Image: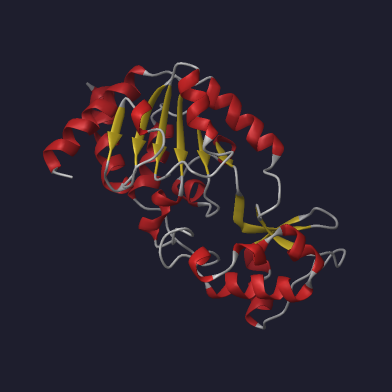
Length: 260
C-alpha cells in the first residue's frame, strides 16, 4: 500500500476513533505474526504439518501418548517462547491509555496484549492463553514457566497438587469456548459504536460472529488485514496493510487530534 493512501485511511480511522464513545478492538493471528508467532493456518503453519484430529480435547484427555506428542510439539514450537509485543500491540495499549478503548476481544493465545500494557480485565481471550496451564482435576492454574523444565526432559507434566492432568489453558478442538468470556465479548460487540478488526480473516467461528453483532447493532466497522475477509463489504474503512504500520499511524493521528 502506498504511503499516501495509508495516511489517508489512517486519518479516516483516527476520526472515527475520536468520534466514537465505545470502541472494541478485535484481533487475530495477523497482529502477532509481526512478533514472530506463526499463523497456524498459513502455509508452513502447524495445521499444514500436523493433523488437527490429533489435537482434540478427547484425545488429549484419554491418551498419555497423545499428551506427550502435544506437549513436545508445543515445546519445540514458538508458542511457549517469550515473544514480544510489536507496534500494533503497543498501539492498542496506547488507545486504552488515551481513554479510547472499551476492550480487546482476541482470538490469540499469546498474552501479548497484556504484555504491551492493556489491562487484563479489558482483554477477552476467546481461545485461552498459552502462558498458563490448568489442572483438569483440581482446576488450579499455573504459569507455563513452572512446567517448562519438565518439558525439556520430555516428561508429560501432571499437577503437583493432585496429580491430575495438566493442559495448556487454550481451547482445543472439540472444547467449548469459555462461556463467561464469550458472553462478555458478545455483550461488548453488541454495545459498541466502533469495531476495529486487526489481523483476522474472520473465518473461525464463533469468534467471527463478533463483528457481525457489532454491525447489526449499528456500529461502524474498520478492518485492517492483509487478505480479504467475509466482512469487507460492511467496513466503513478497509486497510490492506501490516497491522503494526497501520496502527502506529492511526494512533499517532488520534493523539494529535486529542491534543489539539
